[in-house]
Image (cartoon, rainbow over the protein chains, first blue to last red):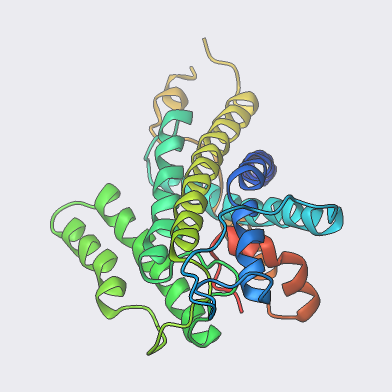
Length: 233
Length: 57
């Protein structure tokens, strides 16, 4: 039993992490490297020579294989971490009598995306390098609190009865109404189009990653559980 | 003979100890990949943190 849960989380995390990393190298990393050109000053938007335009062209991935290898490796670590938490919550729901299938796993994954990526992104959009932001620690606190509140809210809406789903809506709305820590002024040096593109592309890749994570987590979990169950019929 | 087991609505997917362990393991991994600010860790995980929207810097 112990092994099923853990191996399911690891396999799902590695699968989702690999797919998410591949998508990031197609869609997100080029924008990130382009943003870095503005962070370092290699490119300047609204330069003082009265030019209001900057060239829109991402640099190639270059030969920094160690750097990109780390990005893939940490994607695997992050998705495996999220996989452990997601599969644990699936197991918890199963203990309480809510049946799990690979298809409902897909819904689990999408809810994970809403709680971990979409809701925090409403207050703290994914940051292009070179986007100065408020103090790190208050942002981390708001980020973690928003994830917990949104996940708890979604849990109440899906699993609870009576008035509790309404409480779920309150929990989801609260962090957004409180608002994330922000600076009093805008400091961004990158073109706004580039930042916007970075946000939407990274959210799209995360949705795919989380969908795969939920589906694979549930698939491995229900499959290993069936394999160890005595054969009826 | 096995019908009682078969009809149980509860899927025997996990026990509470495994669930608690998985939660802790997951949070530990995420602390390393997304939250810890040690310079070496931050630099190695930098691109991934931005791509995954962890609060970074």
